[in-house]
Amino acid sequence: MQENNSLNKKIPIPKLKRLFDIIFSLFLLMIFSPVFVLFSVTIFIEHVLRGKIFAPLLYVEKRVSQGELFNFIKFNIFKPRVITKMKNKNLFIHTKILEHDHKSLTLIGNIIQKIYLDELPQLFNVLKGDMSMVGPRPVNSEVYKKLLYQGVTTKTVIKAGLTGGAQASKGLSKESHIKIETEYINYIINNSSWRVVLNDIKIILRTPRIIFRAEGI
Image 1 (cartoon, rainbow, N blue to C red):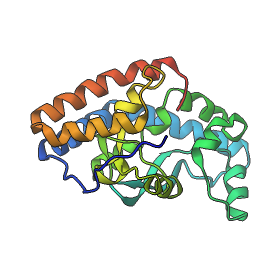
Image 2 (cartoon, helix red, strand yellow; image 1 turned 45 degrees about the vertical axis):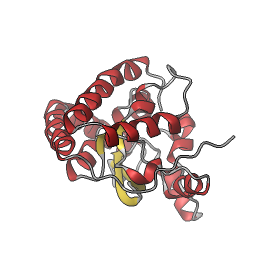
Image 3 (spheres, rainbow, N blue to C red; image 1 turned 90 degrees about the vertical axis):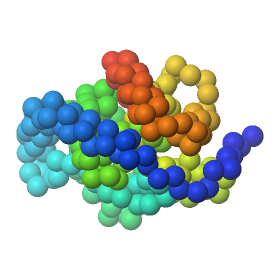
């Protein structure tokens, strides 16, 4: 049985939530700046050893946030030949499928993907306003179209999040992602900005336990 929801109008992000996104993403960028340098150097060295010196350090693809496409960025954890081969064949690149195929990942990619640190560059997406710290996971256009066909609009009404109720409950809740996302949207609609931000903080504080389990996305 498919799950639908009646929410179909875009919800403006509360100003206080946006302010929190900016301050917290800047804070995390400063805290993790040494990690950015370390991962960038490590990825570059592995590219050089693979004979792909000009392979990008970051992987960029189009994803959907609040119904609009944006440039979603993460550390490039994929072997350059894998992406090149798919592009040459004009194949749609489903990164989630590649992430579960460890043969498609670099050595450093296999490590940082398990603890979600390949997602760190998305802090720039949050800072720019493409994403929020908390919200539904951004999906690619193919998945988004399938969700709309099923009547699921949670990816349309609010900004995608770096984390969210569904991500922070991975493996810990039997509720569907759509139900959790719908509950979050209703919470934003029915509560003040202060309550929304406090709820976001609670979700963010639940996220590290998922990271420490190191099971990957």
